[in-house]
Amino acid sequence: MKLKPMDIAATASASAIVFDALRKAIIEGQIEEGEPLRQDEIARLFNTSRIPVREALSRLEEQGLIKTQRYKGAVVAGLSTAEVEEIFDLRALLEPEIIRSAVPNMTEEILDKAREKCEAFSASTDPMTWGDLNRDLHETLYSASNLNYFKEVAGNALDRVERLIRAQLVMSNGKQQADREHTVILKACEKGDADLAHTLIRDHILGAKVSLLDQLRQT
Amino acid sequence: MKLKPMDIAATASASAIVFDALRKAIIEGQIEEGEPLRQDEIARLFNTSRIPVREALSRLEEQGLIKTQRYKGAVVAGLSTAEVEEIFDLRALLEPEIIRSAVPNMTEEILDKAREKCEAFSASTDPMTWGDLNRDLHETLYSASNLNYFKEVAGNALDRVERLIRAQLVMSNGKQQADREHTVILKACEKGDADLAHTLIRDHILGAKVSLLDQLRQT
DNA sequence: ATATTGAATATTGGATCCAATTTGAATATT
DNA sequence: AATATTCAAATTGGATCCAATATTCAATAT
Image 1 (cartoon, chains in turn yellow, green, orange, red):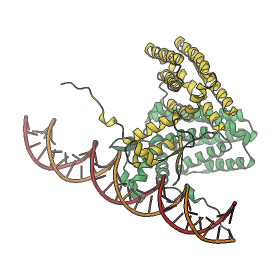
Image 2 (tube, rainbow over the protein chains, first blue to last red):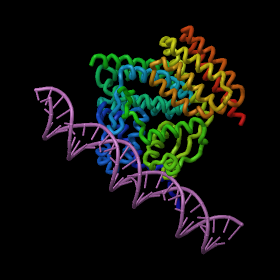
Image 3 (cartoon, rainbow over the protein chains, first blue to last red):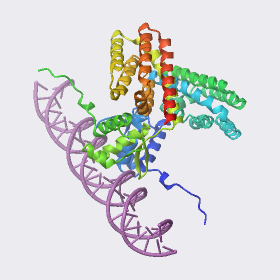
Image 4 (cartoon, chains in turn yellow, blue, purple, brown):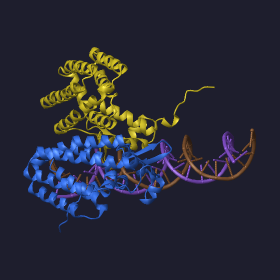
């Protein structure tokens, strides 16, 4: 008899499921900034008790995605423009290092996948999918790097501002700009020019920062 | 009658108290790497139920200080040398930016405090206090910066390796080296030379990294 | 002796219950 | 009318209880 091995211990707990779902909802902007998160309501939605919900909320607060006040509850965290700026600056420091360490490790397989994601992003006309596709592409490129801690920190930074990036991709011509930059970045990776990829990613992030801040100022 | 105002809403919840205590114990190396954290035992120690303990453990895991496995419990997170290296590299990217942004904001008051902390660190002969004093000095210098997110991320990075730094300060001649570097850094701040402080902090961290890794290799 | 099974114990995950606090509306007060 | 006051409902924090899983160790088979 032969069975495919499967790690049952890796099964998700209720609190992990709630955590992932809330994180996704916040990142995608389905829950608005400042909107309260009621333990009872969430527990009902997932057909569970408040205990796993509270653990999930504790984790989300530790990630900076929500703010809680004793006996008052949790709300989705808002960001000042100074905070947004800082988060982009941090990404602009870390992600170039990640891509530089990734380029030498890029297999043809990873490059293929990246080309595919790049295509998909470029081709998609549905703004609702842009956020996911964009993140997908970046994660594919970074998957060749073994700077796991850098990736973790950069990922959390992205989580905090992804809502805004999604909104911004829809408005203005952020999408076309991103398209162009993605193709040059990909080309640099294909050439194996790690330093070029480094500066391109840096510019990509800092460019997104200024156009996002511009837009925030207008509203 | 006059009473000092006091924000009762800011009173710590049981889970916050447990979190802080466990974090401190892990950072200070009072709980060894790999050592299991039993919910019941901790709850008894704090005279509370397991609920706040579990929330604290959730937070600690999100901070990367512990690892948990479903139904098996939590253990203090260990670090590979590659991870240690990466954490120091991240600090070496962020902390120089923090000090550079801090220098222009340094009041005489902050500089006084920093001189005081620097003295205290230099003068202390009790290795058990070095970790705290070292952190104290750095925090004082960084307090003039308003890069709060950078400080948060760098603080968490420091949390993960502080155990090792403490051990290393005791061994070898890490303490004297740190002493010397602290005085030059402080001098740069007094002169208002932000760029110099930037590179000094960078070297300070990267130097600590290589000597720590050297020592880890020996054991 | 070693390996396997099975039951007893320990530990974690989740549900339910109670206490502390906040919220909001109805009422009272000026 | 505007402001306090009171009090019930809503909400969160924590304790206790039960279920699911892991661990240990004795009993048994090979």
